[in-house]
Amino acid sequence: MRFLIAYATYSGNTKEAAELIADFLEKAGHAVGFHWIGAERTPDIAHFDALILGSFTWAEGSVPEEVKDFILDVGYKPPNTFIFGTGDTQFGGDALFCRAAVKLARFYESPLPPLKIEQSPRGGQEEAVRAWTSRVEERAGAGIRMSN
Ligand SMILES: Cc1cc2nc3c(=O)[nH]c(=O)nc-3n(C[C@H](O)[C@H](O)[C@H](O)COP(=O)(O)O)c2cc1C
Image 1 (cartoon, rainbow, N blue to C red):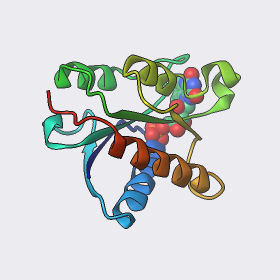
Image 2: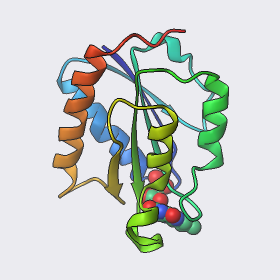
Image 3: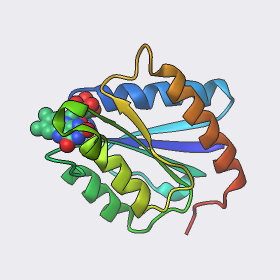
Image 4: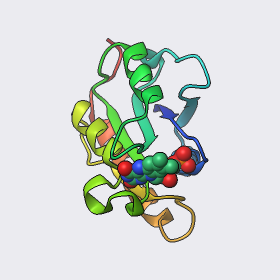
């Protein structure tokens, strides 16, 4: 399958999570495209079978403006969309932790709950990333294609 991993990052945590997800998908034989939201022109989503969208959380549980612009640029809600996020529980505990990812998963009616990572995914959280990515693979394979 062809996956597009689109991610927003300021300090690199969400990029690291995106790279880890890509590693797992590529090792499983999938093609992966990368898009850094806000830094590059939005690609044509219809060239991919599934969208994996990653975002940090900002300002009391907010979705970053760059991610909202990306959503509007894409212009429709691809059905096969999976969400991951990085956050930090120091910014408001469980209620606000990775709240952007929770909001995005609800907005896209994602087939899976969002993956939530506390800051960098390296180390102890890698296994959670691997397990979530493997569920994405299963669900994306079973899902309908995204071209509108
Ligand atoms: C001003 C500010 C507000 C933040 N608010 C939240 C928040 O409400 N919830 C949360 O889970 N993380 C919050 N964070 C933490 C970031 O989402 C977290 O550090 C994230 O991993 C950064 O991603 P990046 O390295 O990809 O830019 C906040 C960070 C900053 C600097």
